Length: 225
Ligand code: BEZ
Image (cartoon, rainbow, N blue to C red; front, side):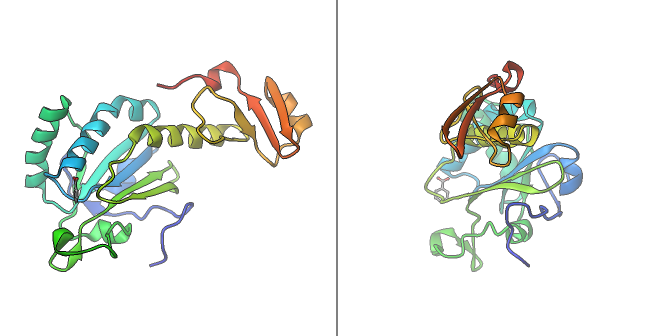
C-alpha cells in the first residue's frame, strides 16, 4: 500500500472500541477527527496522555473534532486501564479507544515502530504502536501527521492549535506564522495580492513583498479556548 501522506484519504476500517464496534468513516461522519495511537495500556506516559485528552474533550468538541485512541491491547485491558486514567487524572474518559489486537489498523496507518524494536516493545515479533496522530477532515482527507517516540508525551494543546490553524486556513486565504495562537496576526496567502488583501482584511502589514501580515475580523480571530 502507498504510504499515507497529507491529502491522502484516511483508510476506512472496522474495529472494536470501548464504546462499541465502529466503521471509521461512519464514525467521522461530517466531523473532523483525531486518530491517535499510544504504545500500550498500563504505562506511565500513556496514562498522562489519555488523561489530558479526556480533560480537553470539550475543546475538541467545540472545534467539531471527534477523538479516538488506539493501542494493540484488548477491550478488557482498555476498560481496566480507563479506571486508572480516570482516577489519577480526575477525569471521565468518554472517547472510544480501539482494541487493535491483531494490529490491523496500526499496520494500515503505519503506526508500528519498525526500527527501534527490542524485547521491551515487541509481542510475537511485531513492535508496539508508536505515538502517532492523524488529523482528518470531514472529507476524510489526512491534514496533519505526527509521530512521537514512546519516551515523549505529546502536547495536545499544540494539536488543538494546529487544528485551529487548519480550520482557519480553510475559511480564509491565509497561513499561520511560527508560534501563532488564535487571535494573533496571520499571513496573507501567497496567491492573494497585497491590493486584494487590503480589501479582505481590516489591517495588512507588508514586512516583505512575499510576507504580508494581516489581522482578522474579531469573530475570526478570537480565542477559541
Ligand atoms: C509510557 O507510556 O510510559 C511508555 C510506553 C511504552 C514504552 C515506554 C514508555
